[in-house]
Length: 148
Image (cartoon, rainbow, N blue to C red; front, side, top):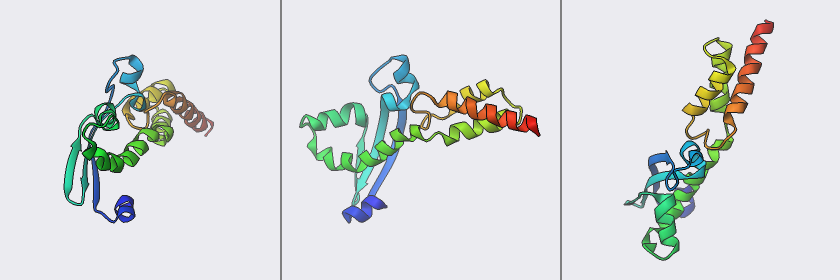
């Protein structure tokens, strides 16, 4: 909506694929979304649709080198959404809260709850560190209930 208002054009952006390890096979690239995102995006500008498969690892480098520059406006419309998606790893509430609830309910130990919550959060666990924070929240939840 914001981009449509700002540009005066009808803009639609739809992620077709959100995955890890677009270019690299290292453990880190395979585990953490933000280190090597595999993104396929469909962008529509005023009724003209373009599918940008392998946006980060193929399309952007090609356009930067002058190949297929007609894709540039579509990349520009997709970029803010991709940025938000990849920065979502800094907001881990949907990792910490499920871990805390699971531990508080006795469904899992804080360590197991942290591990499971991190594994489930492909987008918000896009960077390292979520397991430790989730486990800490789970410990606090469990300890709080033990007091009562």
